Length: 270
Length: 309
Image (cartoon, rainbow over all chains, first blue to last red; front, side):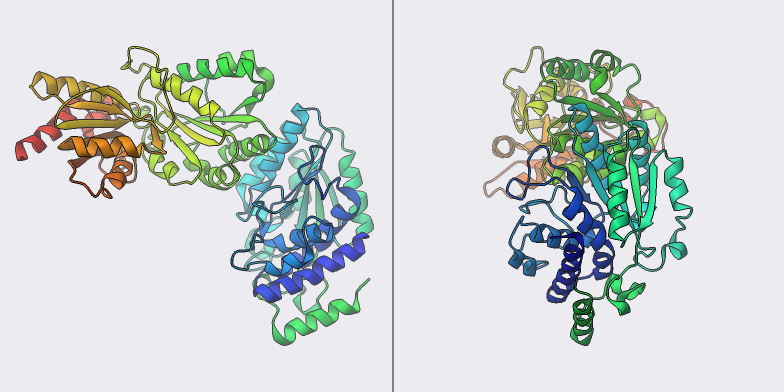
């Protein structure tokens, strides 16, 4: 499956999963869809029959609230049956709202509380260095998540230890829980902050698959620094009335809104 | 205790290349022998306990046995959620080592008093809580901790602790209390470095003709339910002693067991810091006295109980 098809499927599953579960965070699921799709379709070394294979690339979804996007990608990539996506949020299911590794093949690490993923990813990357392994560690983060001090502790560490095998990807949709980032806690100049922390910074359109692919390839080739891909995205991307609308951080697609969202996605199906 | 810990850890690290240590920029002098012997397995995260613990989890997920090291509340309370989510939930081999349980860093002020750590750490599922009382217990607990697969918290003193056990603890087991002295009617139970005060109180009572039994609990979680149950049935007065807040710590763990007993049981008296932060300046010995956990205060409290009956 190519990345465009996978991205569309992540969005379509995302709408369905948040609809069935009456769950939140569809805005984030839609904004991160392309980031995850290009990663799984074109970049990652993974083995769906042996998810713990030693030479696999590691992926941590640090913005755990977009868990549905990773679950959808994993199901489409054959880690578990697509049918199981319907159990998202359900009683007794293994697919919790925020991403959990327990019993879910392909999930490397459980998150949900923001600001944890980068340090853990740094630890994994450091272990790979110690063991002279060549796999990469990808940490997908939110921009609002960068309010967390722990992110910057890990950013300092990754630079100090020259973790060129660590790649942070930030879903920079400019919005967080209550408002736009700029009205909450100013992140700008965002790229400069990362540069000053010693990171390679690649600033791209996070919905453009060619740019994403190029960014990942550049990141993988880094010789001495960790890389952050700042993927500029639109929260709610793909469904016009959800785009850039803070309401859709928590709102669940139901009734006419669900029908309209599905209809819009069907029109852009690749 | 800290030197005993480092020495014991180094012996294990010598034979196990998966052993790593990550410090939050503390351990000047103390960690030097390890740092020099295993420079490639020594990591300084800087003054950044959240990163230290998250990185430890990441390393451990890749098969390493990782020790996080700091003092007071820094390796626990400062990064509690990283311990809960990143370490314990993922059942990783991270060993959290705290130097300075209780009032060890007394005069440094309340920021450096680790006096709620046992309560908080023991409430986390999948975290073993170790509270050795003297150098022998510290050595045995360190060994047991590295043999155990999973997240552990090791609460240590600093240095200069008195040796209570006169020989090596060859049958040390996580979750098992140690009987130090037989006695009648009264049993004194302690966890952690306060063991010396407990031992002194036993001696002082003996001089007064009161023959109290003494037990040390180098593990608070899992708590030794069997031993507590049999103590509760055998003795008339059970006294717990801890250099820790009275809320939620060792005494509470004992109370949880005793309160659910069906059989007739002895009375429980818990001695600990009376649910306050200390703003009084003083060294460990001084603060123990002020907050009622010194041997004299323990004796005083027991005599009060005895005279009541």
